[in-house]
Structures are given as C-alpha cells and as structure tokens.
Length: 303
Image 1: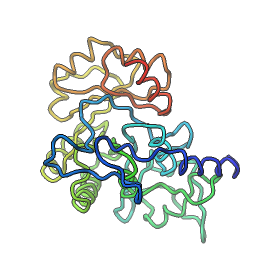
Image 2: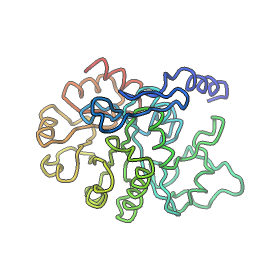
Image 3: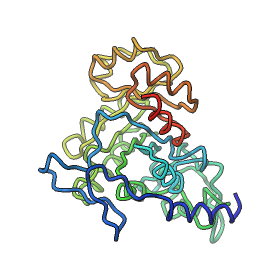
Image 4: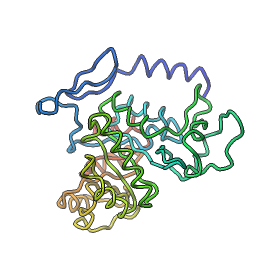
C-alpha cells in the first residue's frame, strides 16, 4: 500500500464517513460521538438490541487491513457498517490487555524502534510499552501496534457498535486479569458496555469462570466457539448465550435446536456471499466474516 492510497483512505474516513450510527441516540457534531439519553427513557436508547441480526467483523476489516486486530482494521469495519467488532485478547508481561490473534505477535507487525528489538515476540513476555513499538501496518504512515483493550473499547463513541472479544488463553489468572480490565473500563465510563459486550472462548471452563466471577460486576454475554458442531444445546446453555460453530456443517434443524434452548447461533468465518445467504435462510442470528462490506450488503439483501 503506497502513501497515495493512504491519503485517499484518510480523506475518506474523515470526509466520507457519515458519522456514528447512533441508533435512536443523538449525534453530537462537535465531538462526533453518540449521546445516549437517560437509561430510564425506555423509548429512546443507544443500546444494541440483543435480538438483532449481528454482522460481525472478524478482527475488524481483516480482508483490507491484515492481520486485523488493529485500530485501522476496526475503524474501517465501523465505516463499512458492521454491528460488532470481533477480536482476540492477550495479556502482556505487565498485566495489560492487548488485541492480537496468536500468543506471538503477528508476522505483519515489525519492530519500529527506537533501540533494539526485544528478544521475544511472545505477547506474554513483552510489556505493553514494548508492544507499542511494533507497527502492524508498516506501509501506512504512522504507527499501528496491537492496540490496548481500552483503545478498542473507546471506539464505542464513534458508532453504536458491539464487541465480541475472545479469551485466547483460558488460564484462570489470565481470564481474571482480562475480565477485571473490562470491569474497570465499564465502571469508569458509567457502565457504557451494557448490552454491547460478548465474551467468547473455545474453552468451556474459561466461560464458566468469567460468568461465575464477573457477572455481578459487568453486563456481558458469553459465546462458545467450536470447530465441529455437535454439542447438546441444553448443556451449552449452562455456560453460554451464543453458540458459534464453523459454518459448513450447519443446517436449519440443528440451528432450531439451539434456538429452542434459548441460544443464538453465530457461525464463523464466512466470506462467500452464497454461503452467507444460505445461513441466513437457515435462521442464524448473525455471521462473523473477514469481509464486513460483503456481509453487510448480503445481510440487507438476503434477510
């Protein structure tokens, strides 16, 4: 990506973006943020309804800004109209929470200095300050490191978006650190995460721990990620609100069984238009995609 493209992109983000999608909230043009009315005004709210069809941007607009999980990828997903930003959580050596898919920094992220690059690229072996010196989009002007959790959650002021964030490491102490970071952020912002936070994991115990220890302090739902669908819906409902399987093996009868158990079904990672339409016809409650532009267009056409 050359600098001329970046100039065009920068102008489009600032000039072409119609502004935050505030639902029934109001847009403050001076701050370019959503202003929500008081919670007791039930007829007017910025909250994202839990029964909506959920268009989820996998690691943001990963198809445009690989490897995803960066602020440019998330901002582009918002511009394209995604309902939810999906991402992956890691804990640093000094207890901060950053977004990165793997336990090691993505290959696209290069050390940008100053000084000598750290000997390790393992997130858990680096401090937040060290990680902030890596650039995941070196072809774009500026520095785009794996962002801190707080910086991603701050994007809620740009649009009426939700968050679906994965506990990559199911170790109890890591789960506790990450969930406490959510609690602290939510307390500081006046419970702004209410009705917009989904915590996902492939690990049942991680979801149980998050629910048992933090549900009294934070409003969130949980999503059980699976590679091979086949779980008993009644059992999954004991620790999850959403069932998130890979897409190819789903059918309408299977989805209906989970709906009967009170679970929503949001498959991943779907990047084909025909497959998206087929899943929508089967009754899924949302889709996770690398291509949020295609997903948003297809959801509008096929639903």
